[in-house]
Length: 474
Image 1 (cartoon, rainbow, N blue to C red):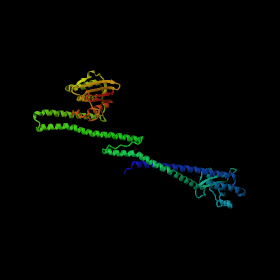
Image 2 (cartoon, rainbow, N blue to C red):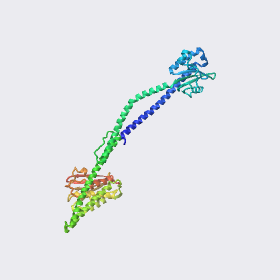
Image 3 (cartoon, rainbow, N blue to C red):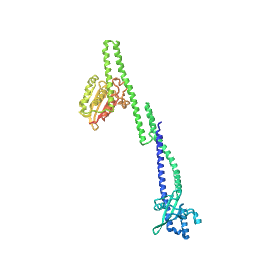
Image 4 (tube, one colour):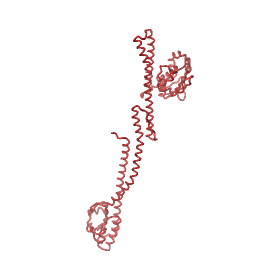
């Protein structure tokens, strides 16, 4: 079973925090222990040095005049530092002790106890700071000072403290540290839970929305609640969802429109062919209906060509084949190819003979198609006996071409959608069944791919003007 991102992040972070605190606590214990140990050894060493200065000859301990003052010095320091202090002869045998028994009786169980000379020497040199000196049952903190007479060691002062007191201090310190850390840890884990939840929630919503999109539901959106990377991701996800939603609507519209546009000519072709085959259509009328079939086939060919052009333009592998050519000559070629239609509708052409030569660098075939579609559209919707005007020039933006036709014009409500795929004007003014509603969309896509812009201006029952600007050199 997959672990949820929230649990992985929360418990992973919590584990890191606990591990970090554990490491910090371990370092604290080690540092604290070293510091206390060093401080304890320093104190024990000071005591040994103090007693050694006061009592330099252990042999004199047999003299009552020095034994009692030395004992009181050792006793007071031992009580103050919670340690035991011993005075030995050169062999390491104890001759004086700081315990209560010696103070009461002048003798105690430690008298005659002998420390290991080798370990005593290591302790004096500072090499041994924790040990048993061959006598104590459990290792403890030790320090020693040699008593010398004319350069010869005649005895030792040894101080020893149990490690239990240090352990008790460390234990108490750890307890205080743990108690002080409980509340911050609880607050930290609570804050971590809230932060993790808030960070994970948009991701969870995105996962749910993505799952819904895989089933065709594009209605879910992610609330943008922060101005950080997660917020940017949520906003980008919403934009992507909107784009996919529009793409899905376009796809459905495309399928519906293509099905509708192709169904009519296919039905016409099929009906007339069947009528000719089964004899329903009389032989003398077959030529008339075959001509209709030919027109419908050509219409299907134009539809397919438009869709192929659209597919090519929107392909990720589409590359412009840029060449240098005269835009004026291309416009003239398009208009000449429409001469028959122009004469049939008695259209007056204006401005064509005044067009200046303008050299551009662009994909010649696609620009030809863009100009052709605009001219075809103008001729299609111009009123009979109306006017189609042409203008061409160059300004700071680039080469500017415009074509204006008189006629019914385009309602203001339709203008924002005139370049959309499969969009057609009101059926009462767009009865030409040769149109799929792709021509102007293809023009816009071609000009956009060249880095240009296209716009439309219209006034109902007066005129319609399309204008595109093509950057020079692109």
